[in-house]
Length: 91
Picture 1 (cartoon, one colour):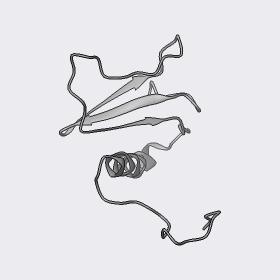
Picture 2 (cartoon, one colour):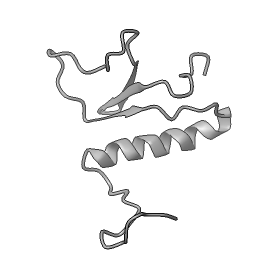
Picture 3 (cartoon, one colour):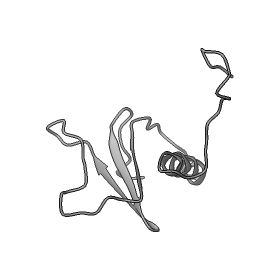
Picture 4 (tube, one colour):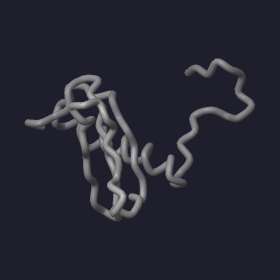
């Protein structure tokens, strides 16, 4: 919490097994990526929707963020709309 990303700051989050790592967007504007000598992570996401969170909200926030990250890597489908739902989508 002491080094929480600023609103709109882009970070790269990856999962390797049960371990997670976070890297901030470089000062030069370059996106963080695994180095050539690293194997690809199990899943990853770039995220910029940081807000100030109450400490009690963090477990739910990260559960949702990690579920979204893992869905993009072939995990549980989190699609919110049926493929035949007319555009634009809404709730």
